[in-house]
Length: 287
Image 1 (cartoon, rainbow, N blue to C red):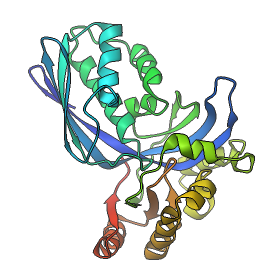
Image 2: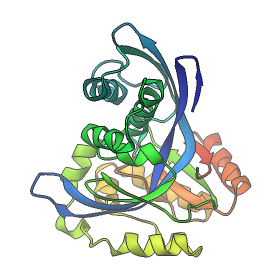
Image 3: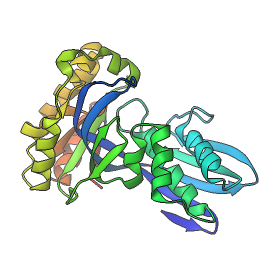
Image 4: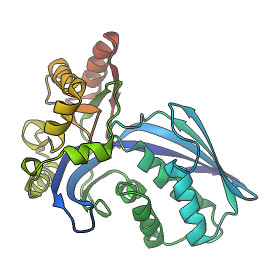
């Protein structure tokens, strides 16, 4: 985060789900989650400027809505209602994270908006207030307030940062042209896709102990449903596994898939080979 006067510039990092478990549906209609989430170096860029009133969003780069359906707009509106300042804000959002790919771009943008507005406020609100606002906007937003790596639970609002943080290998992320609707992906889950959270617990222990094994510990409960309903996603997963020699997995509810590589050079070479055949692919590092 950086600022010049009242102008604040931030990065909003993407994430991958090293594990993603759904334990079942809750009485409130949400799903009970356990997920080991890691931010990566693919990022959107936000610039916030105070105005005399209202919320304005200008989106550059990849497509994102510019009105009230944009999570940045919702974050700014909720912040203003609960904290009361600034009077208005103009947000320039440079999109690099594609929507509908399970990489958390919208949620990360919302969290960055909250952090930027807190920086601009005359009296910075407490972290607990920001967390409360974030949880009301969306399930992934609280995680992005802190970023890094964490285990998230409940419907996503409970965040336990990893100790120590993962500072290991590079990753390759690829995504097809198709975007996956999160709501539709959840609707496709069946009882056979539900687990009890132990996969995430084991992966957390392995990562903290320095013996995380992608073959053993990567997991995503949406793969059966998503790969059957959007077969191009499953085909991309097979291609990325073959190209990297590492097990590729879905991130979030898709449609992006990722693989962990031994180092950045390996990841960049695999990404370049896939890019040359028309696949949208990027090499990233954990942040």
